[in-house]
Length: 370
Image 1 (cartoon, rainbow, N blue to C red):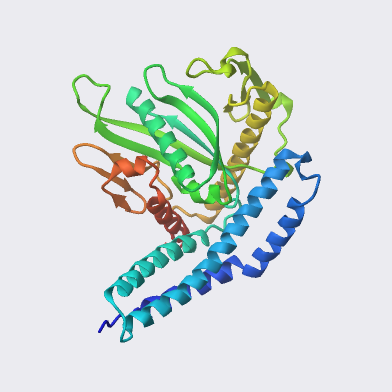
Image 2 (spheres, rainbow, N blue to C red):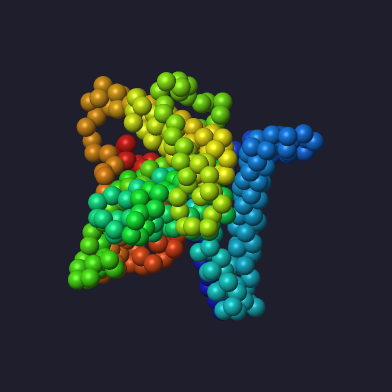
């Protein structure tokens, strides 16, 4: 006779699930879905394409979130039934194995949802704008920057997040000097903001004829995409606008006209480029939104620095080097803030970042209290 006792684990899952439901506020979630459904059904919705996309995206996200919550509730009930069936006189090992697998699946799923409830910052719910820049390390650094770009795009793809590459500046020999892309998903900024910082790669350089080990660096910047209604006023006299021909692999129609736009904010030296659209007007509008987002972040950073100085808070914060990717002489990726590490860099570079991001979100939540 099978004696399967998951009572402690199931009780813990129900407690966690109850906490998650209270934070998410199911009644409010249902009300939001009703409001958005009504707006999505308006005949003139698509007269404003950008607004329509936001409404449909928000509705889809909330419907998915509600369905996920309701599914977990049902699965918890079914798991208890499965355990009872496995333990009765007619139970067999197959049922016990099924219950064990389902328990592990629910533990993982609720762990992910629990992390999402920690995303309650001012801008956590927003879309994200990510910029990757090659740092020290020459050609290897440019190649590393391109590896990181692919890594984040793959991560977004695996989570069904829509992305839009706004600008890529290609390096001469290999890789990229920089790239900026937008991630269109609810809580994209809160989720990906823990990726901001300096990333380090250690490997046997494919660009070095002597085959020596090379260390290279790349910087990742993550800012929230601000709403148009929150746009920071940027006087025309504070910016310089340059137009140029888009760069990149040949054969693209965007390379035939001066449609790319570069905006320089003179007071801060902030530079934003956009070249993914064929229209110069569209590229300028996209570049201005990114510039305003970065200026908003700069304002918040100044406010935070002032508060920190007044409070006399000198505790260590996020260091410049936040993660190391080691390919030689051993295989490892380690986050230096959370101590989370894995021994399969190829999976990480293929977008397997959930463990690092979850650990980073939990670490960030606890850090101010330490």
